[in-house]
Length: 456
Image (tube, rainbow, N blue to C red):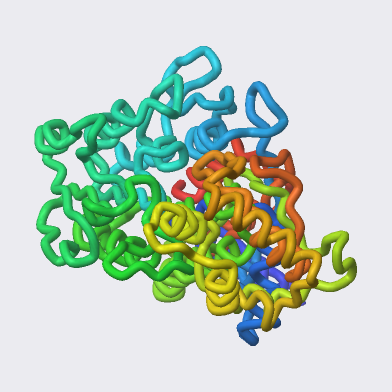
């Protein structure tokens, strides 16, 4: 019996040594911008009840699930710059500051630390690569609005791959010289991916597209990059140039844009699109389970989105969103276009448009009182061009568009508390080498050190 106990002890000790010897060669850091637990659960419910998927979202299948606090150095409600800095460097800073501590001293991101240690680095986002979250991994500026300086830091970073929505040249600045000076090959859109032939790459949306995001999934604009496409391209690039180890940060930035707009249907499709990008990393993990770590979290919660509202109480018929064919931004743009058109658009024209693109009047009941209210706002915004805009961080919406989307959210049983951020905690999901270290209540500033621990 004693001999058997000694044998078991020896086996356990060997297993412990083997486990401790494992290190993460391949690290994926997925950040759903604004993706609090409310949006995650709403998307998961839609995934289960409307899409009829028998498996939860990929992140919700991970063995480690926990929470993360997000407050900044000067506010219980963080912005993306301070949150991104904490997630990338482990240092809390003031809102609007990027890659610096509260005293404007530059701090080092885990991407830089790992790159210096020989890891390849890829940074991918569905919004501008000069925005706060991606910038937190290579930039050091006192204000997130310093986009030219953020772009210069990106060029000088030495990272193998950076992808986002913005071109290197626009009407305000031209980053082409510094990209060329630092050996960065710049390619645009899906059609130019095949032209990549350099170790250092900047991939951006087609030049004539929006510079602030790659476009919403729900709008299905042909010829644009998608988050899964950029994720796969980055992974292939890093495996070509850094097969012995890499770090990838992938941001679902459009989730935040949709939540700022209080656009429930678009937010759901963006989280599912984020999940599709995550599946690419998870498939890689399944082929390299002893060498890979995947961490999924959010920089903050946006909008205070939740299932359940005062209109329909204990119901959340999310299938209402399945009739939505366009984002709030796209609809507001359409409204502006017809307001400026020579043709006179009638209320009957708009009713037909609302039926076809949102399911109003056929799948979503509209009372006579509500129709009168919609018509009044339509007349003011479209016919008389007299509308008070709803201003959000990334877009402005006419009062008619605001009312249409409020009606859709109400019918779906979804509510919002704000057009901005909240101080709510955000989820953390992890799988792979070192993932158990994330199981307790976390602070966003602790995540980088936990990731680095997995590489030792």
